[in-house]
Image 1 (tube, each protein chain N blue to C red):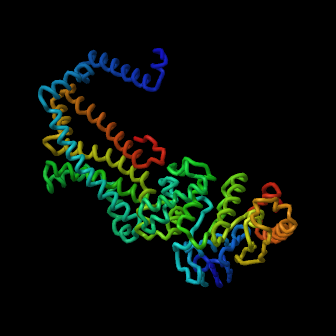
Image 2 (image 1 turned 90 degrees about the vertical axis):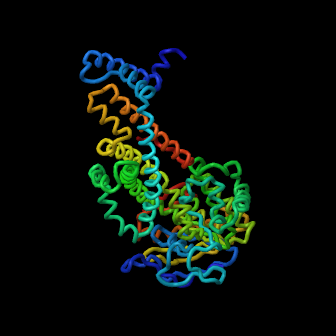
Image 3 (image 1 turned 60 degrees about the horizontal axis):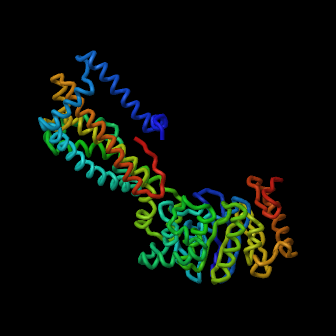
Length: 257
Length: 269
């Protein structure tokens, strides 16, 4: 394969664009040092923060801990509530107003209240992650449970499946694509929620780092957690995408972010 | 084997009757087709027998036992196959036995036997999305037969298939019907298919759905062995059904009838 073909491949184009952005940024940053930092400085800051000051790993671990625990709770509860609402009319009638109201309420507005209730530590992170992620998960699971193919339900019923068997053999597998759509939106919302909570209330965590470096105009350091979060969100989307492909081997799964 | 007595069906409280005082008795091992224009209630009747719909009044009994819902002595083959896309051919075929609580090893062994009989052993671990329409319907037939039903209900099972595949599966269905004592109720749009497969063809009319006439088909079996279409009886019955349906279509000319021997779709109406 010659160089031209490598460069015109999708990966080659992406790499070239990345190199282009870095070069332009570096040049612009060096010419206007007060506006923003530039790649080489950020790289140095990354080494400093990560390996000398040891600020990155603890902060990121704190954020990740809250995110994982909160998201596990949100996914479990959200999927269960979504299916219950989708299949049991009474549950739907009772819960729908709350779900609709909360879905639209900006979660950031709840942070001051949550601080009063659960403090500014681990519990705050978990709570905000649950509140951020659970509603998209509930709503997508609900839509999935509602939109199960009637013909497939007929097939299940024709073979004398009872209500529980219909749920486990038809409704749940039929809802999986919707369920993953909910998880994908949920995980993105969870990340936003926890960072915002850390920026506004917490004294530790990745969000806190951003605020701290921003206050002291340390733009080189400021970019480090931002870039890490960007890469992390890509990794999260990939994890969800990977899990969806594993869970639905019969389907072609579209890569959506 | 199947006894349908005075079945009425209307949808909603004020809806017009879809079926009006429909009675039909099918003997054990008999192959009976229901044919009629769309809206004559043939699929509705099949769904009532399957237990997927409840009759407004009247009774259905299978082997002398009142049929009040889906049960394991009946199996359905659907027009659009209705296979579970997330199950392999084997897992689809084993579905009914899984619902009955049979162990995985045993149900998959039995399902595999039917897949082999239908020439699908190489596709046992394929998903429905990976196989052709004809193969999908074979899986649909396997899924129905695996539970060893007394009564097989088929709702235009070959309607969504191309002509060659359809003919092939018609032959296979005959072989299966001959090798078992299966009683079959078969809904179709195709006169040719009804006469070819059936011991008896029930011609239905619309508004409300009812039996207009029935025809006994005494053509020698197996019919895939010779050119049954050359038999005078075939032509006579086919002609009579056609003229009956044409009269019905004149009243409700909304959907053309498929006439395979005339080489396609009749668009006169």
